[in-house]
Amino acid sequence: MTATTQDRNTPNKNVTKRRAYPVAADEVIPAGVGVGVLSGYAVNAQDAAGVKTVGVSIEAVDNTGGADGDKYVVVHADGDHEFASSGLAQTDLGKKAYWADNQTVLPSAGLASGSNAILAGEFAEILTATRAVLDIDDAVKTGS
Image (cartoon, rainbow, N blue to C red; front, side, top):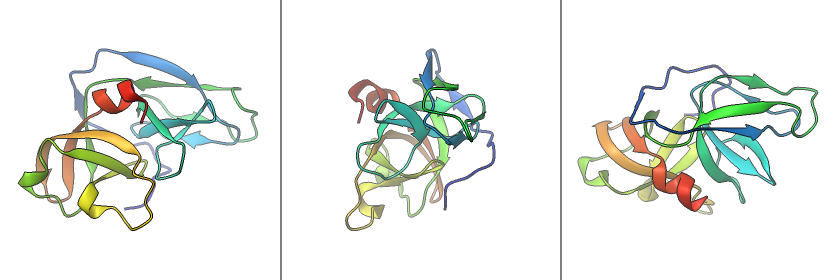
């Protein structure tokens, strides 16, 4: 898949924490996507050096034309969230997942050569070969 610019309905459960982060200049973060921080400001989750996972966006935020920190995004900072994937097998259950883009997570075997391997969480449920439930707790706690 590719990063979405549209809000998505991301099923979730076991969510107890919310946090707000200042958004990077000119960043547009749709609702229901993975969010990371880069240089102290929220960005869409992605496979880019230096990105640290902070949660899943609750509402969309459009900081187009804004400076760093002009707007804030509120995220679920824990819990289990459903995301797209590819090439999943039941044997991926419990393994680490990595961001491909703001709506797609991959097991380590699915990462491209040269990937930055930005930790998204752990596969908590394998729903199909292309959908999984991701536990983001450890990724948020470790800041990876």
